[in-house]
Length: 103
Length: 325
Image (tube, chains in turn red, blue):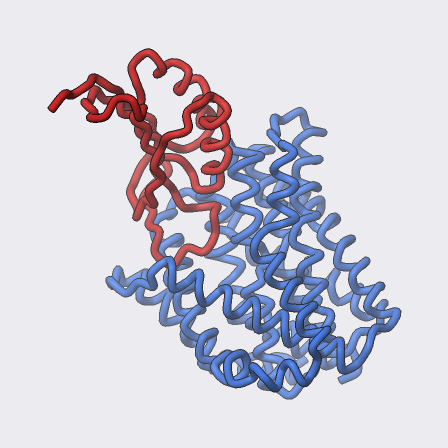
């Protein structure tokens, strides 16, 4: 089965910023991404958990994009417009995908 | 005065307050007791719908009068004005940065809907009837404080990123939409509508509120446990003083409007409470450099428990005495 090189971008972002990030990605023509809820964790601002939270002010989400390497810079510029000042983590890893025509 | 304190002390021994205390104690003791996020959100939706609906039924039963307009105007003015008082007090009592002070001030001008729900429950237990439109006053008080805080930051030369989308999110915040929407459903359908769904929104209300406050206790206790050292003594003193200051302004407004003792207690509670749902989300967008560990700890870890255990019984007792109960 043929495999293709790609980049996997994972953005952990505050819940309050999620729609802004996905809007920014859409406007940069990044239409494919997956949003996952994050259960909890710990960082510079201390430990946190999603249990019992009802406010969007304190939760986090993970947005995962698989993208062709030549489109990476456009995605990162769009993402950074939103995440630059906020709590979060952005990581990029090399990966491989099947069915490259979908990306 | 002795009567006020004995009434307040008597209110402390109730299932809802003891449930909250259990949550705080469990979190501080590092128990593994947790309420899943989805369950907590489900309970908050239930409580907002029930309280909004019952408020609307109250308006349908008693009609609309000039006091309604006065109450809504007063609610808006209180929410706009209290952040300026809070900001001034914070400058006097703490060494927080301008951004942190403004973010905290926004929380204290806005309201805690759960504190409002708990106060409504206490009033019902005591047989006090409040004006149904106090629910609408709660909705009015959610957002203006955010604008005041952003104005303070802009005036002090700080950087607030208030986008057009932010104002839409504030005004169409899910809790406001649900509260106002269910209020109108209750006002339109009246007592007949309430009779149709009473087994769902009346009978289980107190039990759901107990579980929800258990969850709030867990969240508040975790916040207190994890933020030791982040919030200084001056800020904690502010978190205990500001509700009393806010409630005093609420009482003055209630007396000027001529609200019933129950309505006055609710306006005092609204003015005394601090947001931890709508405003934290807005602050994360508009003032990202402000520290959530400060404003969330003060709002949820200091002022919310204070209002629940001491504030609501005190406001109820004072309003009953002064507003002619």
